[in-house]
Amino acid sequence: MSLNWREIDQVLAEMPLEGALIQDIRQPRPPQLILELFNRGESFRVFFCFANPNTRLHLLSRKMAGGGTPQRFVSFLRAHVRGGRLVAAGQLGRERIVRLEVRRADRSVVLWARLWGGAANLIVTDMEGTILDALYRRPRRGEVSGGTYRPESEVAAGDPETLERHTLRDLPGPGSYNERVEAYYFDLEEQQERARLRDTVLRRFEREENRLLAAAQTLETRRAAYERLEEYKLSGDLILAHLHELKAGDRWLEAEDYRDPGQRISVELDPQLSPSANAEGYFRKYRKAKAGLRSLEEEHLQLQLQLEVLRRKLRALASEPGLEALREEARRTDRKRAKPAVERDRPPGLEFRSGPFTILVGRTAQENDALLRHHVKGNDTWLHARDFPGSHVFVRALPGKSVPLDTLLDAGNLAVLYSKGRGSGKGDVYYTQVKYLRRARGGKAGTVLPTHEKNLRIVLEPSRLQRLRADPGAS
Image (cartoon, rainbow, N blue to C red; front, side):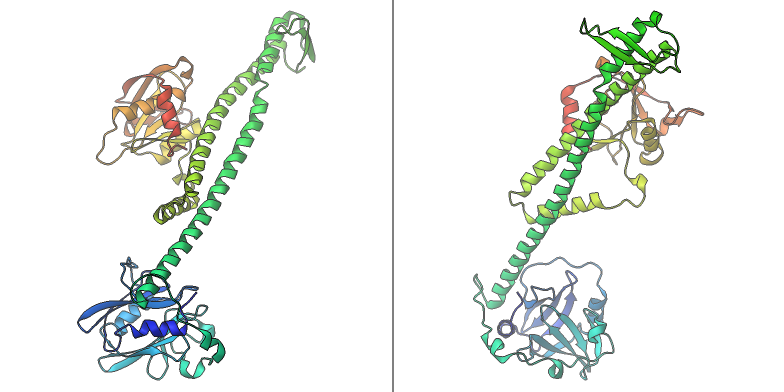
């Protein structure tokens, strides 16, 4: 809650305001203002907060970061108030309006600090009440340049009984009343910010968890479709085994299931195709389902790792993290939610971390081509499995750093893993810088011809791959 009139009187009583020189004006945040003053041989600062529900003023002892480029109102105050002296200061009756009269050269202005929780403002007028400027310009209230502000005649008197019941709160802590007000409100604001940030981050985490769980459910649905792959292979085998019995136009093959002697199985045929073409059709479905199942398992593992990282963050959030940690997490989630200026700013494919280096992996010819065209630079390192179709793997360069062998081995393992040669568990990988690649004329998307390439002999290391997949930077 805001300071009441008795508390404002007490705060003002402890401030040596009259005769003070205004040395500077700062604004840490939009609803805050600091007057840097000098009086009786000492410098001191007066802090104003115009944000509901913590509207207040008090002496300031703690350091506060600057607000960067001065905002409009601060620039106005520095031009018209800085260097002046406070010739009068006090509260306007019981109205929670503080009047600060400032004389600079031969001109006087009045700063009206209205500390009402729902309508706080700092208004600057000349001595006749004409508004020169205001912290918050409110046209409906007439609080704009050229308007009139005479609170002595305009403010309501208030209910005398209610005003009389206001008391001076016995705020906790040592020191003067100003020191206790300062400590109380900054602690209160920190608690409020902590609660707000925890709630914001928690809601975002829960949304992300729901998204990952929904994606996992989609994968399970796809898995059910792929689980028929052995049926596809069996159908193809049975057709080949009975080619001599089949002829074009047949719709069904009735044969014994060699996996379970005595049981018969029906295989549907396309009458528009030859028996051998029907067999090849089933084998094609088998190969596609098998490849899809491998890809699905990789996606499933990635989802599980992302869920584990997210749940670790949720557990940490439940253990009362520090305020700065909450601020950083909120900034991180804001960056993730921010829409890129152009879609190509977000690389396609997979992303891994190897120490300070980022490794990008294209999963398809289209992703390989997009990475080459839009997301890598000449000094980045390109790797590819030799003699096998597969992913383009890129290690993004860092200024002043060469790519260490351990990172090359990380990227080489990924190049073999995401290639047609992964089944052997080993293979050769060639690598060079992106600037030594040229696209093959008339070739398929992503097809390149390297020069200056070197060779790595890679044996897949499960522990290395597990570390890459488990890194929180992997996506």
